Image 1 (spheres, rainbow, N blue to C red):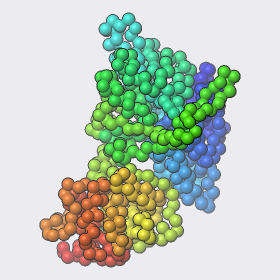
Image 2: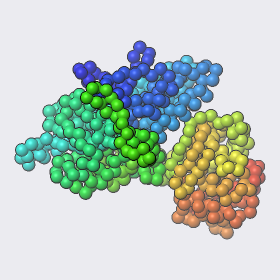
Image 3: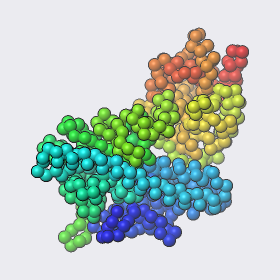
Image 4: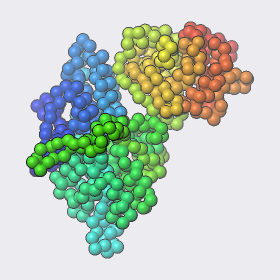
Length: 576
């Protein structure tokens, strides 16, 4: 995008340094900042010098390269895990950030030496940024057709002014990505083609991204626009002044629920009431195919109350000042995002085309993600996962040794593994003290015969009523984390839980009188956790039960790892 005739990206490498446009200074000043360390990248993301899903992801990608440059050869991998955890913690809602960090870590695992890993990190950082710009350009091409159609309809009706009026919320333009933008990409494409298009720009309290950023870039590109207060959208729609709404997204579930800037949901509800098309524009990196229910699963960031209580602006003197708008004693709450249910969304604009906000149509565009969708349906990571990527402590790592040994035996027997279609099954855990924490094998690790410490995670807290699991470690915890937690909560005498799949044992137990959860309760859910607590509360100190609603699933628990494994092996041997 051009500013004063000069083409800029929002983030770029120049002479071996990473540079960004500091969006905190806009619209009054254009300030270029250099990111020299991973800490600089973390601060830029957290303090919103960069913001927007795509740009946050690109900044995280470059941040990982900066971390790789800093990392000592003697401790390279540990350093990178800590850097990844720091970056991932800066903004929890945007999915692009998590994907960029995980992509960098995955790329470096395929290299042998620190120097090779640094080169890989550099290649991936470039690729993430270039892909973001390319995806947004394609979103603009697909969305342009919608504006063309609307313009043609207005002309066919003989409207005296055939201008297409688009309402947007927050900033999902060039400044929110590496280039082009998502929601504004179709607008720019239409304007450049000569189609008369006008944008209603929501101010977007509390940080005023619409007023500060969207208005800035529309003006720089010469697109007609008007700034309106956030609550004006419904009025504009009621009076026929909006032809379509196009917004961006920070995370989209595989069923089409959308997390975006707070206030988006209200625009969608008003658009539905007034029969106005409501589109969400996003690159595929914003999809989170592990999630299905946006309201239940997407973590919503709550930011500082000062963002609500204070506003900044430029005085007539040209000085930028911050002022307080409420009484000193008045507290404030500041949720940064809300979730718009898929039912209110007309369509999703992606780099591969336009689809309905349904699982079936999303997978039509992204068939390679069907495995993720299938796993999620079966219960994989149904909970909201708040995971910190880091190494286990030496004490935590020591707890995984005997778990790994037992798990290898179970894997060799086919009790833990991976199905032909790539879905993992089976997991093992042990309690850490008596504060509710436990170490558990990671999600998607079934194919590995032997798990080292990097195949385990520590669950620090699980809250069934919030469908949330808080954890840390090199990988994410098993999808059964809440079920394991429920057993430990109900039975303080239990220190080990093992979950396996065995069709013969499963059906034998169902045919008999074995304890079981109801058939209608799916695994990996709060309902399963509650059912398990009820079942195991009255069982002996060592026992097996079957999850009737989870095909082939059997659990065993005991005071020690050895006792749990022996109980299970004896039960399997009795089937011979």
